[in-house]
Length: 103
Image (cartoon, rainbow, N blue to C red; front, side, top):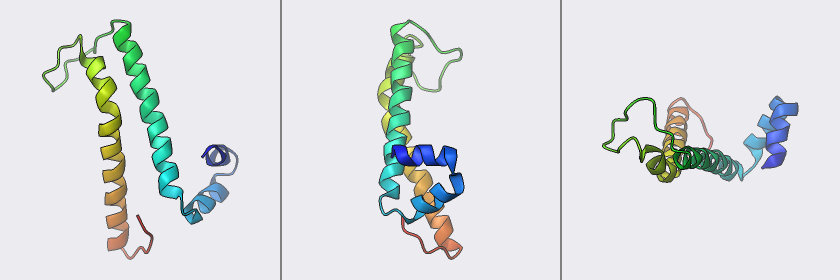
């Protein structure tokens, strides 16, 4: 996973081609999604622990005092749902235009 991250900084085209041929590419992408979602969850947990409140009201019926606490636990499942649905939509669109790749 880290090899690809460094590769995208040093040689993005070569790394992209190598990742496209890697059978573990979807798992590598999922791993990086979990890393970033986990980091974001930790960030909003720190915001909650420091007593911060959002600048605007959210659309959910969550009190501003608890907003970041709720977000700490909902970020990973909601983020994964977005990650998977975006990937599925891109896959379906590529198939519709004659793509032959797998999900």
